Image 1 (cartoon, rainbow over the protein chains, first blue to last red):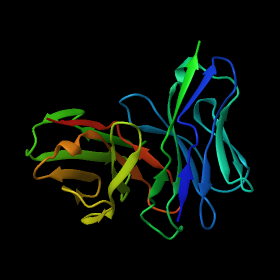
Image 2 (cartoon, chains in turn brown, cyan; image 1 turned 30 degrees about the vertical axis):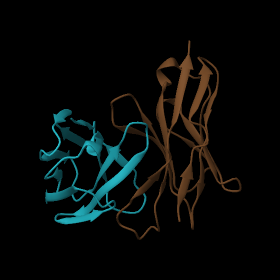
Image 3 (tube, rainbow over the protein chains, first blue to last red; image 1 turned 120 degrees about the horizontal axis):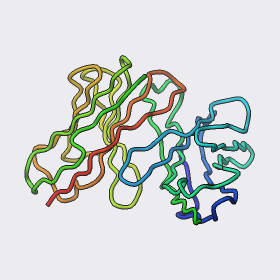
Image 4 (cartoon, chains in turn brown, purple; image 1 turned 180 degrees about the vertical axis):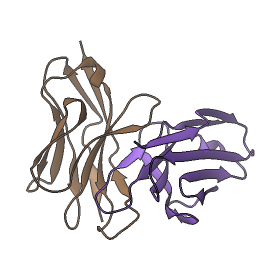
Amino acid sequence: AQSVAQPEDQVKVAEGNPLTVKCTYSVSGNPYLFWYVQYPNRGLQFLLKYITGDNLVKGSYGFEAEFNKSQTSFHLKKPSALVSDSALYFCAVRDGPIYNQGGKLIFGQGTELSVKP
Amino acid sequence: SQTIHQWPATLVQPVGSPLSLECTVEGTSNPNLYWYRQAAGRGLQLLFYSVGIGQISSEVPQNLSASRPQDRQFILSSKKLLLSDSGFYLCAWRKAGGRYEQYFGPGTRLTVT
């Protein structure tokens, strides 16, 4: 069965420092991986995805993620954190094979990022 | 461009009352549609999804139901709300096919009193 894990409930970084939010996955077959961000009382916003190709994926707001097949990880990164990056971050993996037309996603439990000035 | 709407934004309902939450998508056709609930805390629970008009798949047995009367309209309903139905309800859409991400609406905050 497909699964995704975010090992850290909370990550704290200082503004201007690099940030990393961790995600590991377990899938059968090729993984389709996604990152989302959620601000308080708002819906989730799509940041980026890995389907195939380069292991370093660039997304919105200066975020990028590194796909590592040997470590089954898909960590979210940003070179220089902003206070406005403070939010809840979700990693997700596609549930099931590509012919599953439902396109369901399995979400991690979320990681709260806090960026201090 | 595509837009997803949800209403109402907030709702306070007494236990035992009915519920109807609506979600509509603009700018696309034949989307996959999803209802999630996010309880206090953070985890997302998929409640229902739909790949077409009248086609509803339920992920979790409960006192909620969903309907898709039109291609871009998805409704979440209950005949009698429970306290445990409180939460943040999110609708999402996805372009049908293999590789696409889901896009989420702004959500409805439901408080059952």
